[in-house]
Length: 268
Image (spheres, rainbow, N blue to C red):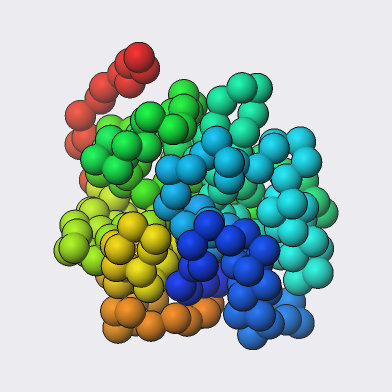
């Protein structure tokens, strides 16, 4: 049993300017210098904003400046770090959530559900598999923005004698302020139905398409109650401590999973 310190970085993003965003994020994360956290979470498409200019902005998977920057940040701060990027790989572009460990190991999750109302399917390819990473004994399911609206994709189905698939659901986003109620509600719903922590990190400010973002980045416990929840619109870096002992105790005390409906997920 253990603890996981998770640091949420909620910030404005400079439209389609990766170098400027890396500089600004490096400055914001200075508050975490000195090994004050185990995991730093950045927003979706933290280098560019939610741009559909994938043909010109996507970074190469094998030689990405922003992935190299993530590796440097993880080593410098001796913690894991994650955030999504536009990545070109084998002839396709992906909205790819990159996960980097303190030792520089890189894994990733490609966003499964592409936001058709923003023409994302016209510029990016959807992923076909889920990804669970591990840190400090915690298993974390990775997801990106629009994925949050699809509970079947994110649902875990433990059986008697089997371990839960994950202990925390992580979702990075560029979720507009006009739909902030849905964002907040869905984050809490995913925590309740999966008996897990939920980490949701969104941006603030206005993007190049004139969309505004309220932030509402949250860390939520397994009962759906917020641990981190700041007023909308402000930039902040805040660290929450997750407890595996408290999570296990609640799952034992309130085993709703035993009454859940069973299903099989069919992928297209």
